[in-house]
Image: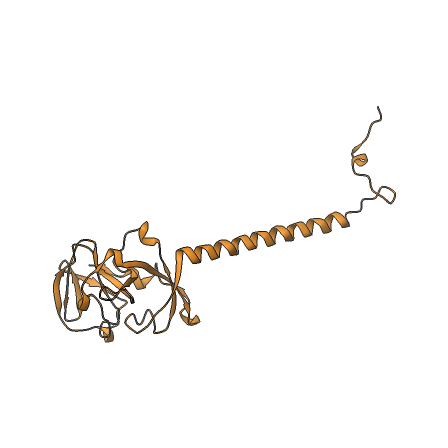
Length: 208
């Protein structure tokens, strides 16, 4: 049997010299196809996530200023509260209890079973002062309120602009079943582009 060395397995033209150009070109085209496929899959997955998990919302009014401005566009997470509890400081979107054709966006202040009271513009939960660095002093409302006990499966919500906000001080605590999303990201105008969770706008809603 004739012995064949490694060169016999890859015959080439031109006196035995290899011709890698065609192979190299084919490899580049293959990589481009893989890259394009992965890009399309990533875009498709992103669209699925946005459509099914997130919903674009337009803010109307100034009740959540300075965090959110009138006509600002944000994304809300529609499924987060199926897996996580509603927490104090969350900025939530809910059906207006007196007219479910309308949606409101407010901040969660009181949790189920808690006692909420406002004295000279300062909020107290179960008798303890609530630290709210997201409410500028010029937006505080000095009107006293309560104390009010938040019912089971309800949440006491307020706008950050206390003077101009129609919230639980007017229509009472909101039932859990009416809350359908949490504000997570602002995308318009571009100077407000960024996350609405995990920052000082929510983290400082603490009783101390």
